[in-house]
Image (cartoon, rainbow over all chains, first blue to last red; front, side, top):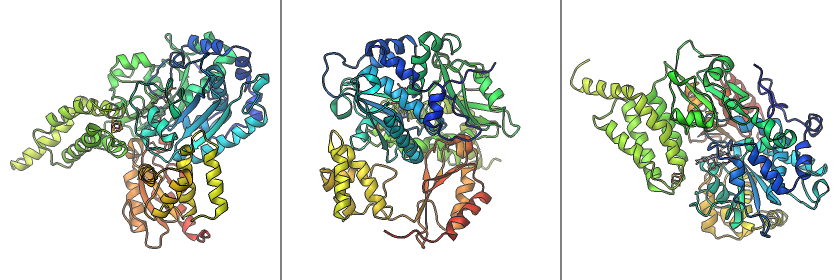
Length: 427
Length: 163
Ligand SMILES: Cc1cc2nc3c(=O)[nH]c(=O)nc-3n(C[C@H](O)[C@H](O)[C@H](O)COP(=O)(O)O)c2cc1C
Ligand code: SF4
Ligand code: FES
């Protein structure tokens, strides 16, 4: 079965990514979705997105139409803002890079459609610092779009205007959390905000704001051009659309593939990523970027969609698989994982700021052969404490952490036991 | 202090937003570049003044983000990804090689001010692990040999003209 290429129509990551030009984009049907949208009322466009069952591609899978429905519409006369989240710092995730570097107009068109549907006249693309070249690509594409009447004033024969700015972040993983992102865009420290109020009501500069992921926006031109039913037909088992899936770590052919939402994980691991890279059997997979719980080989037939992966005890997240094999020490891997969270914690709340480094210290000590008998029960306790935090960052850290100390507990215990044995003079 | 015309450009940029403060990060980025890659106390004060926020606010922002440096850095900042996929694919070996070749540890700058070595979280390039960036350039599937070649090239280039 060859999958229909939709988002990757103009992108081949295996040949090297160069930005698709405006002319090329238009030749392939680009900006037809925007034209179709502008023939409808904003409410009708919102309805198409709702009917398409598009779910957010930023990690949480929240239905986009539902998210949008909280934005005040007809009687609201103030400024509203549209924001694209291209922070992409979740380890194991590299899809938005390909979408931005490979087909910038697809993102711009998606944002234009959303801006029209929500009647938001100002927008920002928030892009991580390390994608500086991507920011330049987007700026050039924005200028091109403006030249051709897809950004700016009096768009597509209407009175609608949309101004789009590219904001290069100064770097910090927490900026990806949407309320932290809004603070960052306001020129503040990227600490998350409490919800409610939700950004749809009170977001950027206190005004109604929508934050969507790059890939979420990139789906919109196609949905508007081909219709909600067509989009629903792209996925498997009742899932709507395709998904950019990735694999990295211990696979022979790491990369990105556009596949139907709901494709079995095994297809990605064996067919596309071509199996283990060094002849050792797979041991575990983190299915959707680092913040999702580990899954084990007996779960590899699970369909890669939001509900199926959730039922299997993990999360689809960003659908970037991180693959471990039998040669990988899970104590060492867990230390690496917790190092990431300890470093990137925004420091605002105590269980996260203090708890995660504490966990890291213990895991490192265990790995260095200095584990104590009580360490596992301390780690069990700590895994609960880091769930009581101000934002979803620390619960995100808990995902891989708790699954590691549960599924691979014997590896941790073996380290601790060998130390006890050594202390007792036993070999 | 930056020359008046640059100050005006920075200030005008802030005026383009619905709140001047939105421009703070951009202004800090421009000043960092202007002042040779890092922000000294005066630069932070200057940013606060241009944008119209308190010094404490500007300092809070300048110390929060990974890509603002409050200490001098070398001409080339090397950031090595040490997140999970690069960890599995051998980034520790790359770091060890760099430390040996440059004679510095992670977090340090060479005596000739040519290189600063820092860890970075996932570069969004995990299918080409291990990877690192030198300045704005990304290097894929790095090996000690490929790294030596790259560094030889950079080292042979004359120092960029100081501002
Ligand atoms: C710690 C943390 C980091 C996040 N990072 C990102 C990110 O880099 N990109 C992204 O699109 N969403 C990220 N999210 C999710 C966003 O908060 C938000 O849900 C998403 O941008 C909404 O877009 P969507 O509805 O289109 O999925 C992150 C969430 C958390 C808690
Ligand atoms: S959970 Fe962590 S990242 Fe989130 S607010 Fe608390 S300290 Fe900040
Ligand atoms: S883990 Fe190194 S680039 Fe993603």
